[in-house]
Length: 638
Image (cartoon, rainbow, N blue to C red):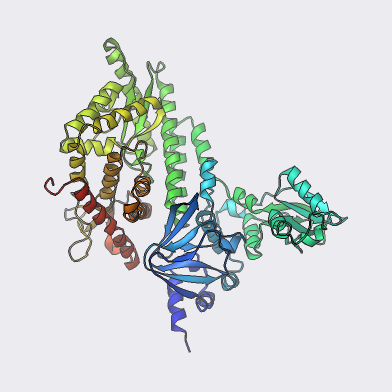
């Protein structure tokens, strides 16, 4: 008799990675043992600090929040949506959970038994590589990495050209060892002296007998199970898992996951019967896979021609595609791609300065505007930029401006060659209107703020999201101070901005159908940017400006800051942040798929689940627009 429930579970699993990489018969064996968990909104699945369980999870319906807690403060790290996996830590390490998982809304979750999964996915490197990535993103301590200014380790695609995965693994050649006659104290002193996390216990012929890690010391000594003077044989994990020289990164990954270990002993013939020659650690695997953003950034910094910068930026699109395919959280993706975009622009300015006949006459700053200014530019888009230069005496003004306009022309021309199209509205630093002295910029912004009209609001929506990419940051800071000083003296400007933020109707019609375009070229297409993303961008900008918060441009970050500032509206603002990231991710995927900006989407090409995901993002748009109407008294102003 067929198990219809298991078949339905299997049908769902096979739609998503890594289960789409598993053969149907084996996938059904997993599905037969999957537990189905129903969660009300707010229910907790596991908490930070809980012991690892014998399964990991996948979202069937709804959404699961992953929350980091520090100093009694909770911060939303990411939200796992339909088809996303999370709680992968038990597959990789025995450490406790680092994050808390709770239902963001009414949800159904599949609990996947680890043992059944491992048996079904045995020797499938693509499956395990995907899970390694999931672990490194969903369970990775991103907070520590941010503090250390590290770049998130990325992974390359699963194909025969994946050189990083199938290259020979680099391992530690001269591992620290101790004899089986040593005491734990002697072994620990060696570990401390050499600043290492493990030591290999060997016999007289240097054959590996066991391994001691920091976890062993914590679990067996600190708990009082053994004294510090006990023999290493009482504490070590034995037998060790071994492999021979020449193993690939993929082989190392497989053995570590299969045996639930973080260290692999390399011996002369690959068995415990020959001399130890090295140790491969989980860290070595990550390094071997390649810190691609670092490589790209180095390539950008060393580039001496626009052609090389274009090549480096094109690699970023491949990197972006791989990130999205492996479900890396968008917050990580945004930070990495934004850093690369800014590095490209900075190098373009440096190369453009080399083309000038003289050094800049005064200090200046190059500002990225729009999506790049917000740190949301994932695909190639048109340019939005501006230049501000230090005030000069009137007699020197024309010559100074002439210099910076020539420089700006070099910059925008190079950016265009790299792939960033010229702005159709000419909102670029090469336009005399947007290449101004600090005083001129201050007056420009003051006019927009104190004498608001439709054009001023349109320009403000672009120019208020700026970021200093190159040059004298103090000029940009002074400009920000002037903007907020002007905002203190007006309330009408906020009403104009509010009116602009709520003018876009709901992306759904009365009958909950998508509102599509009705003109020729885009007829029946859904404009995800204008109808879904821009209302959130405009709302986030208005609300954060009204709170007088400086230097916070990213839409997702703006809403998360608002959630912290207004606990009573935390749920709304967090939903807005999540919705915007989901929409940006969706737009980016569509752009990569069709080789365009992803702005216009053919609804016929979407699955039912994709349409449901989109519709889930629309409710926060309506809710935040209603909040704006009340907060800024827009009822009689619209």
